[in-house]
Image (tube, rainbow, N blue to C red):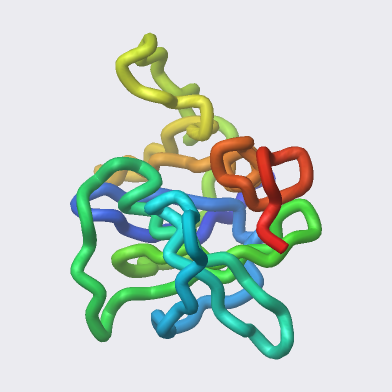
Length: 153
């Protein structure tokens, strides 16, 4: 049975997250900065009464600073019962991948942290980096959910 992934871009690369984790897609809103937060946490937004932390995925993946413009997109995710926003360069489409089209993530050793990559999706001439968004958002350095060093309140 194929899995569906929402694909998004960061720079020249295409990434995919499990569509079932995506709550909505919206344009980039101004965020309220949180003092002393890690650089990749842009701040928080008020989304219909829910305070949502916003992560800049370019900064999180060390891809350089992005210019925010009219095309910058925020993907609202529901991960482990927590609503989180992630800022990406753009959203491409929804792709279906069969298990045969998903290759295991290569081993990079300690040079690159691939623990948040579940695999690589191969479809025609496209290569999709599949992100385990739940593992990423629940990582202690994100400080987003209980179990992290200090959860955002």
